[in-house]
Image (cartoon, rainbow, N blue to C red; front, side, top):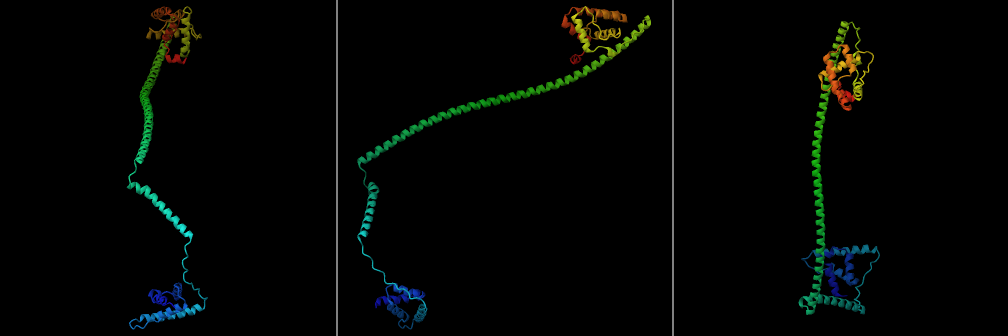
Length: 368
């Protein structure tokens, strides 16, 4: 038996940290260290039976505990299969040519890498480069500068073209903006002018409407006044005819009603016929009574007295009838004078003057 292995195993087993581990683990560890069964038993005995030492009581109790644990372990292991014990580790194999080849290849790779690092990075920083190297680097740098100059010139040309294009676009935009501003200004001016014209037109329309309403009201009042005057003249004429008829013994003539007075269209037709043929006297549209024409002529003469410059005298036959009815001489003379003046005027003018003499309102002529 090897005493050195046994003593080392005893010291191992007496360690307090190892004593807490199971006995099977300790036996396996000792077998791995190369101890056989006799050496392991001897080491366990020595560890359990240390030399007598009165000052150390704890070691005795520990050995007793280990011994009881071993006995228990032996009893439990008898019920199981026997454990396999491993022998000591095999010796290292001898080196072959493959190992030497791998070592040489690795050494060559490391050496080549170190050489490249030294030649590329270390030596250029320590040893200055040669003259030819400097010339080559200078030429390369000059070529690079020439390329950069060409690129810069090309960029300057392109930048100038872009600038010119942008300036042209800005000019076009300014022109468009000026046109738009001019159009907006003109539009605003036209709009203000249109609004003013519209307001003025509205005022004119309002004034025209007011004037039309006023003229209509005045015309209506004048017509009412004229009708009232005509009625009064008819009443006076009727009373005059009654007086003359009663004085001369002439049978009383029936005076036609106011409805027998011709309308404006009939008066206009009569005036046109008088203008076309001045020799032929105009006939009244109502022939039922011989007094109708004198009544009509008498109303015309009364209108002529109010407006002597716009009226026209009736025909000569009408004057005879009116004279027979008892019209005063001064009225007949006045009618004759007006008839002579109107005979000197020509067609359309005579018609217009005859219309004015009759005194027909403009609205009635437009309605007819």
